[in-house]
Image (tube, rainbow, N blue to C red; front, side, top):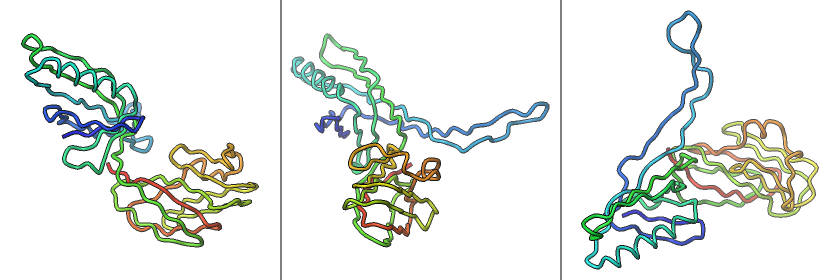
Amino acid sequence: MIRLTNALGAEKILPLTIFFKRVPFDVDVPTQPLYGLDGDVVTGKPTLRPRQFTLEGRIYHPDKERIRQELDSILSFLMHPPIEVYRQHHHDRYLRAYPLGAPQDWIDGGAELELRIPMVAFDPYWYGPAAMHIFSQSWIINIDSTAPALPVIETTSSVNSLTVTNQTTGDEVVVSGANGVILVDNVTHTITVDGENALHLVNDDWLLYGFRLIPGDNLISTSQEIKITYRHRYY
């Protein structure tokens, strides 16, 4: 059974006869050939490619009008991307994907419908449950997943500056010269103060490397009381 949620927050359970079997996991390793030598040399960090997969199957019903209604419902639902596609038998993880079409084949004079929905998840990670912590000074955050999580960090009150350090990884974000509630969004890589863009107030290292929570224990220290929210991510 495949469960979907669209950008409007609507939920849809696809018929049991629609499924996806192949979930790709492609890694791009940048290389450069060396003149006059065998093989290539690795020139950068391996990265994950977007995941392309297809929801496919057939819709049956003795009443042909019911098949048409089900198709209309699915197509209308897909017109509000991105679509959260939850794993079969594991509805605690999802890919955030965009439909690329929905070719249809009507069979036996409309007695059944064969449907294919090719989709692409530009963000290749599976996402799991959300978590939130509020603390000051220091806190240990345990990431029970396989991939680093990208947190959203927000001060709980108006402040002039903020320094948050992951003592485990060395990642650090420093915002200076602010006057308001600071929000550090490591998902969109943005900094705001009272909702206004403040990217010019952040340290260069954060601009280059960001801030991550890695699998396992992360010792976080902060100069202000903050709220950290994130979703677990999986390869």
